[in-house]
Length: 463
Image (cartoon, rainbow, N blue to C red; front, side, top):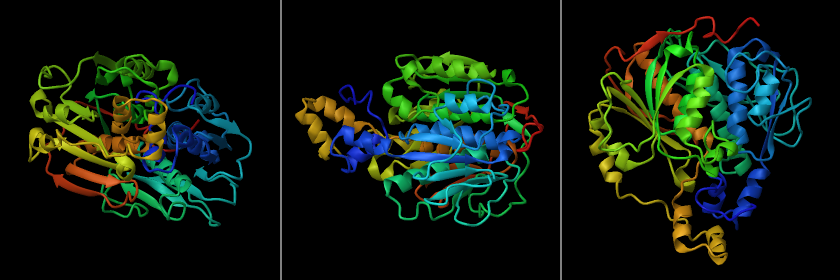
């Protein structure tokens, strides 16, 4: 690290190794991440498949923020780009723009993620095939058996597969889960109780998409929502109205957790960076650069659906007072033992926002300041206030925010396609198949929708 560590520039994944005591110094924590790398081996399907491109670019963008040793992509031709997720019009330009390296052969000393059905991949080390079909996504460990082709899916499924893959690779590198590299991991977004590897005849084809949304908070979660919305098969992005609310500026640490953040944008307002990215795709955006609180009110002509991404109990308490017709809120776990956890609430609900979050107003962060890395910082002259600020920042990884974001957008799609909604859902990437939830009856979704582009909603396209 070239400059002193503080709460604005600390790599939020490196903090995991500081907090659990594995790293003796902040430099040691970064060195651990610099030893993490990933091969991505791609099959020929990526030339004609929108879903394979979504999976690949989501994997590269998410993984490169955590595996600082590098992301190398082998087998990817310089094909036409079908998705608005990277600079340029070709797959190679998008991979490089998002932080990956295009190579001819994969490395033999890194774990491997497989997208599609390439003819060969490294035989040593763990390997996972990303798997998706319908509303289901995840990964399967690959040994000597043949690879499976992927089925038609909604766009959320390959995104979910990519997020779960990065989680499993991180667990393997970190050595903090004995089954990493040995187990299948996945979930159905339509029916979480269904075996995600078995076809579900009850899953509908995607026909409608939300068109009027208010995104509150543009950090880890808000940027994940934006990335996911950009993957949905809209016929006309300009028919979609998005209000973006945040008061904060991007800091160095956002680059480690948030999918649209780069070091070049440090110091700029989050609203403006995200708005520019969405407008390049064609979305209509408006920005609101105020804190959310008891004073916040939605006007009748503004979007009635809020996607919540603010980790602040005081702001959450006021959600019900803002006059939204539907709020889908996500929360992320904290601390070295809970950072893989996520939850979802929808409001209005059987309990008010004040009842749900008032008890958290006085909650405290896990005590980690006695770990060796913090003692080193104290000896270097960091005062008690600086140490407290560092210790209060949560461990953050982009793959958890992305997973939570998939469930948030899936909640809107579920309601648009006539199934029960979730009032509460919680889970962990430590065991993604063990989702707990409370269902609720919902009224027909009348909060703004458009028909999806059926030619782009299928996984297979003609180039």
